[in-house]
Amino acid sequence: MPVPIMKQGEYLIASIQSALTDVDLLTFQSSLSEMVGRHHTRGVIIDVTILDVIDSFAARTLRAIAYTLKLRGADTVIVGIQPEVAFSMVQLGLSLEGVKTALDLDDGLELLNKRGNDEHRE
Amino acid sequence: MNIENEVRVSVCNEMDVVIARQRGREIAAQLGFSRTNTVIIATAISEIARNQVEYAQNGEMRMGVVRNGPRCGIVIIATDQGPGIPDVEKAMRDGFSTSKGLGLGLGGAKRLMDEFTVESKVGRGTKVTMKKWL
Image 1 (tube, chains in turn brown, red):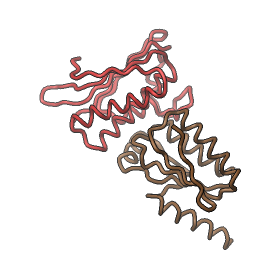
Image 2 (cartoon, helix red, strand yellow):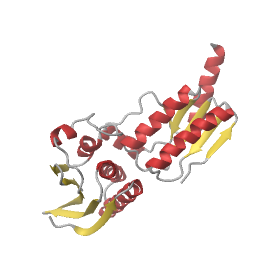
Image 3 (cartoon, helix red, strand yellow):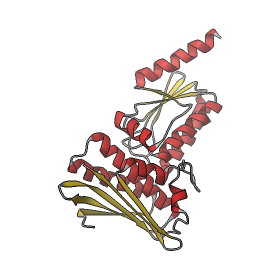
């Protein structure tokens, strides 16, 4: 099932809607990358609230998406990792090193806005 | 081993990975595992099922309730007729992967469960048995 991606100002918001297969994740990765180019997006929020399992493949793909979008000039924030999922990821030995995370959509937007302001000041 | 309320899932493609972990969740939740442990069990199933899809054909998972005296728990037995694992100990070490994962598959799943054994014969297949007690 494709992941809906909404444009909001200079940001894209993608809310994962169901348990994703590997192919879904890879399709998601390429459509996000394409949309970032088309809309000159500065920031992307990926909402994973609905994901009840983040295994090594999902974590690796989320990380790859964030790195790919970084190279395309956009910051990625992963929001909504559930407490049980976070605990399980740590047990499994997974990390999302180098990837920004926030508790929810509001915090994610705030993080992106803050970064935007910091860059203006520089 | 006596498995109660056994559920079988054939694991041939990645959609089956999602189905397998959903079945596991259901069994774990019915047994009364906490939300955290339910997610942990589903994650372990996901890692092992993914291995089956990645390396073997005709993977199958049997899962259900297992008892040991007064204790009860969930057992998952994953079998396949794949190429087998030449060095199981090496494959259980972190960072070992011959494929696209993070190399956490076997070692990671082992950390998530209470009991974890791998039997493998090169050219014949692999059997992973894992349990978590309530």
